[in-house]
Structures are given as structure tokens and as C-alpha cells.
Image (cartoon, rainbow, N blue to C red; front, side, top):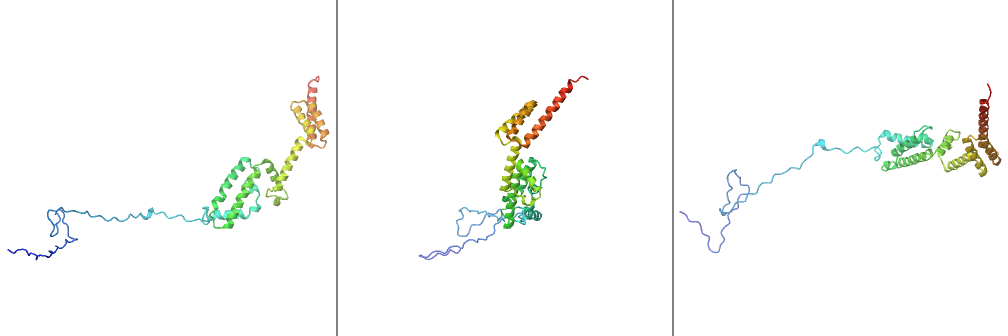
Length: 264
């Protein structure tokens, strides 16, 4: 029997070699404690952390970004942009009805619907990202013209004057409703009103009373008041026309009354 070697006094005994880090583990068999370790000390098992690969979405789930439009902003295709450019190019040749794609007999409701349609289509906010500065400016001008067209056509008096202008020999100079057009319209409206009720206060007073007498079938009083109105405005065509109408109505009524008492 051999005895273990005893280290000389004053020296440190050698440390046992560490356990192999890659020692195999057998299922169901407890791990072997490294040499020199206290066999009564508990063994701590460290569970292995599985490696997790990053999730990669399938190729079908990746949606490519939409291709930019030709103008990089309003989302119009090439054909729509071509139509827009063509419309802007002939802007100075269009009257307000053509601009809103309306007939000259359009009703106020038709005009309102057309304005809302065109203003939504050509609102400048839709084109603020356009690369073409020139085209963007023309779009702004088109929108202003659409608004101008609605301002004129929604007013009965202005529309009447505008239709007369664009159907006359000076159409090319009357396509835009300018300040001069506004002044002409106001003057025409004033003249029409004067022709209807007169310019002289006394003449208007007698004319309005004659209208009330005619409504009550009091033809003699109506005739008398119209003749008084004409003394203040002898050139008033409306007074003369109304006097002739009342005189004829009075004669027709007198003839009918006379015929009803005739002995047959």
C-alpha cells in the first residue's frame, strides 16, 4: 500500500485541473463532479438557451411601394395629364359655359353641380407636388377661371348679359367678365328697372296705382292713372305699352257687356 505524497512544509499543494468544459452529458446519469471538488456539494445545472433565428416574412407578404405618377403628386395618369395640359392650353378660347361643360340653357342647379365637379377636379391643393412649375401655375389659373365662371353664371342678370356678349360679334373680347362688364351689367339692370317702373317719382307713383286698378279690373281708373304717368314721362315705352293694353281690355269688356243686353 502506497501512501500519498506529502508536500513539504511551507509549500502550496498543486490545484487539481479544472473539469473539461465540453464534457459529454449522458441522459439519466448525474454529472460527474470535477476532481478535487467536494462530492457533497450540490451540482447546479444551467439549461442551454436555444438559438432563435429572426423571423423572415414570406416574399408574398412584402408589398412593393406604388409606382409614382408622371407628375409625382396629384395621382393622375399620363392620359389625364395630357387632357389637363390640353385644357389649360386653350383656356383663353373657352367661354364660361364651355369651361364648365354646360349648355347655355343650363339651370342654376346644373351650374352649381358643374362648379362643384370642376373645382374638386382642379383644386390647386391636389397639384402642389407637381414637378412642372409652369403646369402648376396653369392649373391655378384654370381653377380661378372656374370660380369666375360660377360667379357670373349663377347670377341671372350677369348670365343674361354674358350670353348676349358671347353670342355676339365681339365674342373674342367678351369671354371674360371684367369690371367693365360689371359696370355695363349694372347700367343695363338700372335701365331695365327704369323702363319697368319709370324714372320720375310721380310717374312711378301713377304707374303703380294704374297696375293696382288693372288688377281690380277698374279699367277707367287704370287708364286715367297711366295718362297721368305719361305727363311726367312722355317717352316711357313701358307706360305707352301698358296704356294700350288697358284700353284694349276696357274696349273688349265694354263690347261683351253691350252684347249681353242685345235683344235677339
